Image 1 (cartoon, one colour):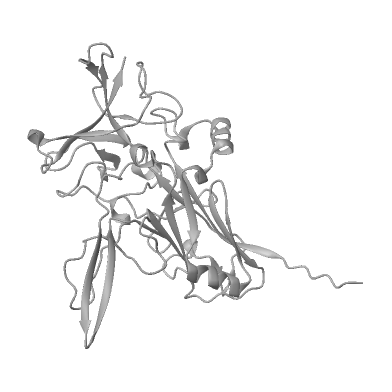
Image 2 (cartoon, one colour):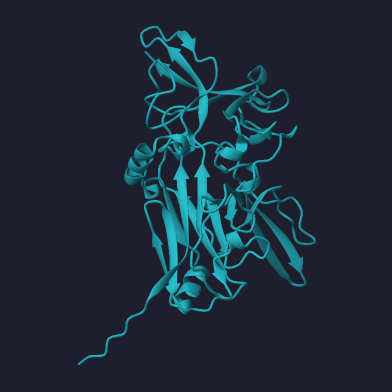
Length: 340
């Protein structure tokens, strides 16, 4: 009789990437919808329709050495290892996020920031070393994440905590103003704002401007972006973001994946929340081409529901208005045209 070997796997961690364009209902945030509606939305939701998440080459090699597995799921990804596998506290798992949907940037907030790639060189003796950077790429990490709630309803987000307002904030930046979650609908100075939630502490921690890490150049290197990532041979040029999960978070055990080097009994489920875009809805006569009316404030783009009594956009071609009509000056509003 052939020998049969059974290996029991234990989930090490899971990441759920939830996009509110596909989950909110008009102006109503997904988190506050009735349970039956939320469950229905999640049963129809599939992040693979708009992004691809892949392990880096070194992470795939490490998982193979550990006997572990990576799986894409409708909600994001999961990693599992044989249940008695020892994992070093220094282990880090890296995954790249790339975009599938050509409309993604139109319905996703914070996609207006430039993501240029720059190359710079450092002469070391007779050798020249090349450094390549991509600006404004977020890194979602359990070492810099934030959380909401208390056990057993604690939620672990991989985004940095929403910051206070800054005089350098740009359109679509998020901030905490007097405890409320606010989004800019124009750039500073004298930015216009839209309140997303009356209590930021009760709202999800959305992808925000602090998720792109500050870049510290090597000695002798100048001219790199303020925020972004170093592109190594494992990260594609078209990367939208990185997910980096450390096995252990020494500062906060809630964000650790292991305990004494083994997978935790209750493995963590991390969340990334992508904010849907909001813009002023401008109605144009389809026969005359002349403006009819426009919304008094920016309205959200959502697949479900309608925050207005008037027709919602059939397309999501977002345009920007600039101060004095000068594209080198600040953005005064984002808008979408609806012909009726």
